[in-house]
Image (cartoon, rainbow, N blue to C red; front, top):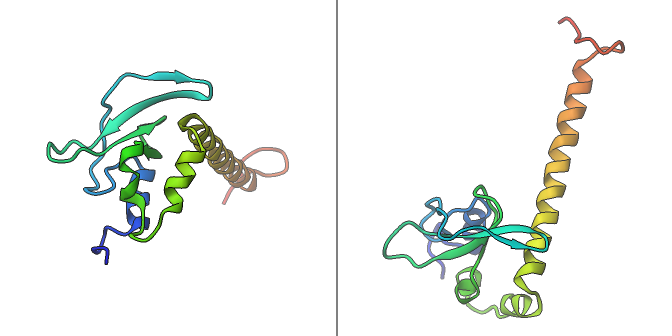
Length: 130
C-alpha cells in the first residue's frame, strides 16, 4: 500500500512542475546545461541532504524526468512495464517527446489567449465598451 500523498499520480504531478517526487520541494539545478539534438537539458536534484533524487529537465518549471536508477519511484509495486519503456527509448527520444508535448501545450494556451482576446474586440478591432 502506498502512503497518502505518495501515489504514483501525486509523484508524477510533483515531477511535472520540477519538484522532488517524494518531498515536493522545488529541485534546483545540479549541473550545467547540455546541448542535445532537440534542445538543452540540465540535471536538477532534491535540496534535502538525505535525498538523492535527481532528474533531467529542459525547464525549471518542469516537467522533469527521473534518472534511470530512480525510475522505481514512479512504479506501482507490481509494475515492470515502466522499465521496459525506458529501455526501449533513449533519454533524447523521451526529451524530444517532452519538448513536443510542451510545444503543443504552449500552442494551445496561445490559441486560447488569442481567441479570448478576439472575443473582447469589436468588428473594427477596437475594444468593446462595456
